[in-house]
Image (cartoon, rainbow, N blue to C red; front, side):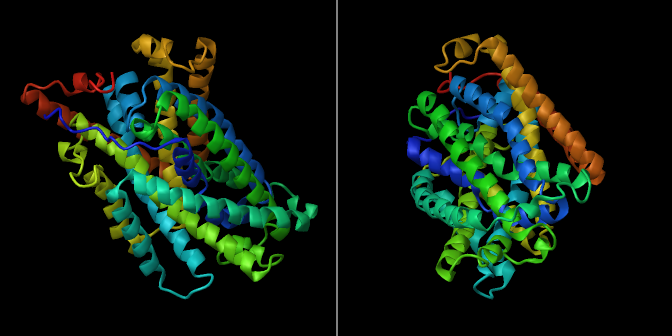
Length: 450
């Protein structure tokens, strides 16, 4: 194994990183999921968004502490392998990457849906276009990504405000009853599905190596992006249900834009559509930027082939990792499942990462006491313990609740995890024959990280 993979030397400032995270959090998901989840769940879909935010508190505190103590690229993998066990480190990208493929397909599908509000263009062609364009952009580098992201996030926020502020005057309180018209099961599915956008906050630890002054800026980015993202998404859902109700809204094409057309003039409806479209662009954009770093960091340990750890000479980006994320969704475009199934797939993967993150947080003071002790925003030990337990329990509860409703998904996920165990053991055995203790390598930080 070569130890000289290179460290990404580009840096993103506070505003750039906040733009990356806000765009990753809001994205297209809330525009696409509003109608099908409201139709199945009823008015309580707004409460589902709020409830989905409760585990987010534990997740943000976990990200804050882990990202501050060990700010590295691909933090999700590093925390699992260094602070839990080598297998759980391997299992994190093993579980998350297929979820990312589902997320990219979801986003591309949403983009095609909202383009169709104005232009009749073949949906598959639009999906291919957005996936290919942003695959190329993310091979070019994160500075381009951050610069482009700020412009897109500005329009995204403006479009949501154009829907929410005037729409608040057209809300009918009667549309919020009954809260659970189809029972509690669809509500559980909605809570898990709405973790799709909340995944975006973990991006701040995936690009930790590339943020200026990470110890100071990581908590600032989290606070700013959480305040902006959650407020806008809850407000959009509340106005959507308050204006349109919940019956039959899943029959609307580009539903948020269609509802906006009931009370907004055409130019502002166009701004709402533009927000949805740019939300899809920011989602694809930052998904590549974030999770390619997880693959890159795992490859530095030879957990996956070392070729994925190398940086391109021209653009200083993990181009092979970007391709691993970007090519499979392009191939899967013709067989894209429903948006709800896609959102659940990614949400379960993210909840798996939240579970591993909680375990990692619990072990941080014991395994890396100096990193914990000298963190600029160290969580008091009692709060750290509560946060770790809260992360683990919230992930387990949501997993179990969803799998009681959709057991077939549980069977698929469990089967994939078991296959991952076999792949990991085979790779460990292979390296042992070459005289390399792969699990031991996965327990140590690299020189530039320690």
